Length: 186
Image (cartoon, rainbow, N blue to C red; front, side, top):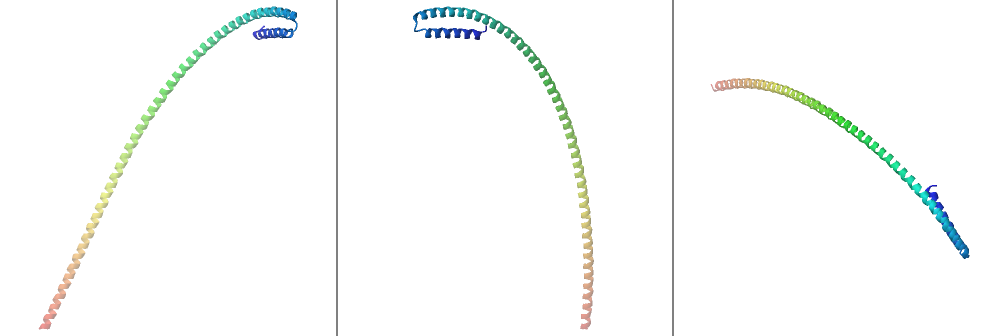
């Protein structure tokens, strides 16, 4: 008999006892007899319930103890497995982090070398282009100066020739005029 059944039996017995007592209030002799019968029945039921309760408590205690031992063992096993898994995961994470750091360092080093090489190449090309531009500018300036000097020289020669020609013409005209005046004065 389980604990619920025992409790139900006790409640039923008590209920029956009270019901009997209430029902038999009118008759005093029935009350005495019912009270004695109820007391006796309650005593028997209580003793039986007490024995059944003790047995149930013992069984519950044993079952609880066994369950606690099993739970403790399972908890210890789970904790051991969790600890092992955590340790393995930590080692793997450390290894992966080290590998990633090594790869990042290598990539950064390669990138720095490539950047340095590219910067040097760009500086060399810029220097070469600047040098070529300076040479071309110098050549163009020299050519421009030479052409300007030649043009100025040519212009000066033409101007001198024209001045000489003008002067010669003026002198000739002046001489002719003077002769004419001299002829006329004579």
